[in-house]
Image (cartoon, rainbow, N blue to C red; front, side):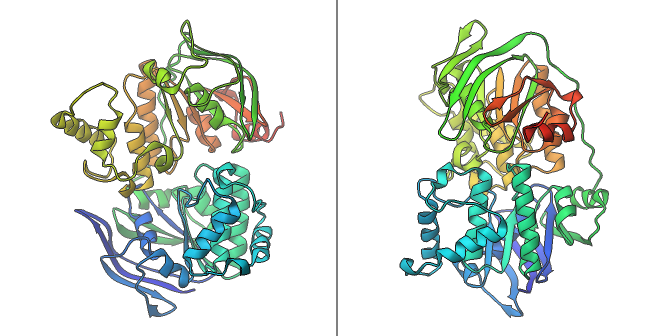
Length: 487
């Protein structure tokens, strides 16, 4: 499939999200689309996939101009997009979920659905999904595999992947990359949207860079990483880490903690979290990190054990009791669990205000909103709806909602979807909190992030958790072996 975008413009109010973008995409190519958070990458791809409409410009598919008014229009032409957040139905079985999407594409005869063709697709790609299993029981990586298989099943020739490696394990990333290379070899056209330069270097034959809505330049493989960084940000970016702020004062003590879940059981966890310390959680996706964080936040009840906060045992208390004591949880699923679609930024800040008030002080709430937008560099306005923000700006909004002061922050993939500059900035803000004796426990699929930012690391494997390990004595190779059950 040969694609041409000519002079594409898109506005959101006063924000010029795409400014005169022209781009040609050849068949059988894996094209990397790079740019800082809010550069217009997702907007451009949503236009190409029919999710939103361009304000002006042309889209030519195999030489013919097309007017894409909906995702159904794009699907009929063979264009499909795998979004940052899965578009599926957790309460349904995989088979039911696929039938719903099949109906939307215009196929009405479900009795004639070629399930064998779908099984062949996932077999060829190295996937192993049980069609009668529940969507809600899948990991993020498995839900991504489901969506990819569905798009190919619907006959997609141009596949758009928006930050597909965010929050998935290294093994699932390997399966994904192998599948994409195989599809490109079969003549499929693939657009890989990412801010992770090492992934673009590994996977793509060509890369284009957007900055502030404009197409800045393009490069052919092999890529120079420093050159791509300079194109993305207009300058070189170096990663920084503030000094260790941990003390020997115990902030939270976990003793003989057992957590039972339908997917996994975690047994006999013992460790102390020190004031101002950062602990990272490493492990393959689905190894229990999420259940562990939710148990420490009061969102999931452990089956036995103790969670001591000072002299008080929080075992059996709910998440509101934890929040009153300054323990806060930030989920990885931004729009499903963290933010509220249809609510503005200002309404989010009003909702997150823990003080009990009968009336809303509109003047104060507006000032808080403007201060937070400026402090967290959110590319949006007080009246912007949360779903209108880019993925990186949604993450900034989510982190800006955390109450201050906080004693313990429990963060699930805190830099999910963030570029290098934004990741640096977020960790500088988090480390500032550590200087004020806030303790942090965070999970991440990025081994480099874990070894660089964590003071100590807990490794998860099949329900077992290691003793806290000093990150200074760990490298990515050893950490990877431990995640795989070795060492």
